[in-house]
Length: 107
Image 1: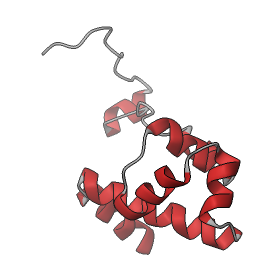
Image 2: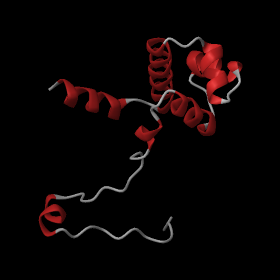
Image 3: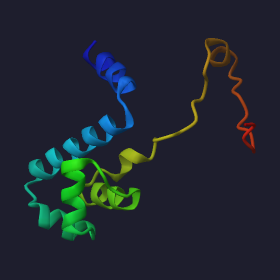
């Protein structure tokens, strides 16, 4: 039940709230590992000011976020991000038929 409510809560977050949530999680991981901000920044090849800005404001480039998560051994968690769902309806799941991905946008 707890897992379901966390998923539901995540669906209700705004982009800014999600940025701040990720920033808090990364900071917690850094502290659990025992790294100072300077240590993680150096290991990730990111400026200390970029790391500080991310932890405090949630602002960071995707490139630097990936570098930081790699330095913390958590890069693999991004591999399933934005994957197309295998089935969107129960009928698709039962038949094994999924929608084709269009080559172009329509709007």
